[in-house]
Length: 143
Image (cartoon, rainbow, N blue to C red):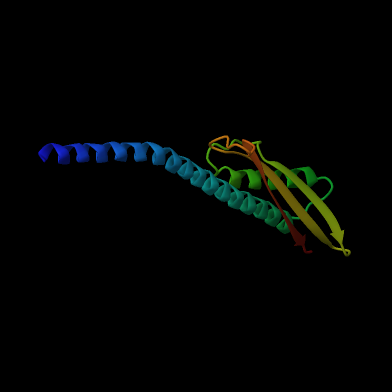
């Protein structure tokens, strides 16, 4: 009778090992998917805040035809400073576009858009290895 209980216990341990071998890869894949999703959401929030910061700078600071290039460079710098909080980001990865539209006689509408190429941890089947995260903000510049 002692041998029978030892044999049953041995089989249970074997079944546990097989179950673990099946479940652990699935759990690992789910954890990596969750990590990638969290990273994408975080990066999108950072891009959104960066564009808002650039648009705020553009709305608060006036420019002339002579200072427009400097004004745009400062908007891009404000965006890149915010994007720097994303791990493994390098300056110059962000593509920023700045458009201005005259509203009335003295007011100006400033639209700032930015696109950031985000790299996933794993190349998931059916998904591109890089996602372009984009956002656009329009603010009015008052006299």
